[in-house]
Length: 374
Image 1 (cartoon, rainbow, N blue to C red):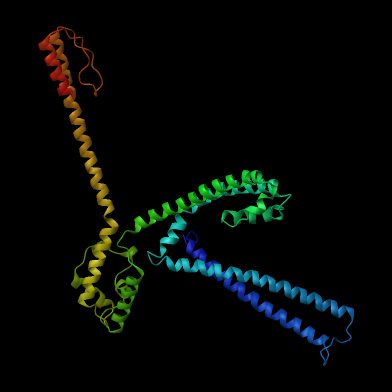
Image 2: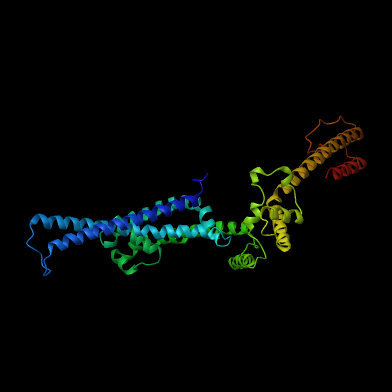
């Protein structure tokens, strides 16, 4: 369970990146000092190179080249550290509901974006190779795959030079440019935005309109800190520590308690600090509201199940009554018409069509039966 949580992996990535960067920086300093020491040994008092042999110079140049390569590697590793810090900030944002809106949107839309990205990359690379075939002989920007990918991305972002593209001919340039803009820019990019915005709306609806804002949470933190400083309230952790862990709660302890019981329980655990009456009221009120919020869905589902069972029983009873009425109507019409009773039909058909004689009374009776059927 620990490794399955994404934020725990982010923490370990941050730790590994920080330790690796620190070790690399220390090794870089040691290599730099060693290179400077060798350079000092090669220079004389006047700052000129001594009469060193070719071996000493080659050794110094090899050491200098290794130091430069290690310095470049340290720079590459240094680029990873801001990314790890950014991921750490995302974890901090997850603690605030409204700040976590962006992170939850990205995490929930990740699967859809991966599948979309596969389609997008396939079509994008198709246009890249088509652009190399179309402009590669005339335009240096399309002379290689790397350059073509770069220029196609710039075109997708709106940075393109139409005049240079028309050097091979306006019709030839439009033959590649118009489908690229229509499909990649107008269709696929807007589909990507639609995926993200759809997930954003879904996540925002889950949060609701009464979600705590950043300033209200800051105000609450200030009130709690100020209350503990003035000793008008105690920490919520101390209140929670007054009760046994959830895995060891006895049935009697799990029952609803009163305000005096709550104060007594906290006072027994922490005799030096009594739970104020106002804070006890707040704790009980918020705890009860949280409990109802977490368990309101189950009673609703149970009520719906009971309603469905009662409705099913009523439907079964109504079908039996309709079946008896159908048989009675069929026998009555058959006796009036002087014909044999028709064969029973499906439950949904109360009265089967009959060949009635041309009689006004019989027709009126059949109309009344049809009205009863409707």
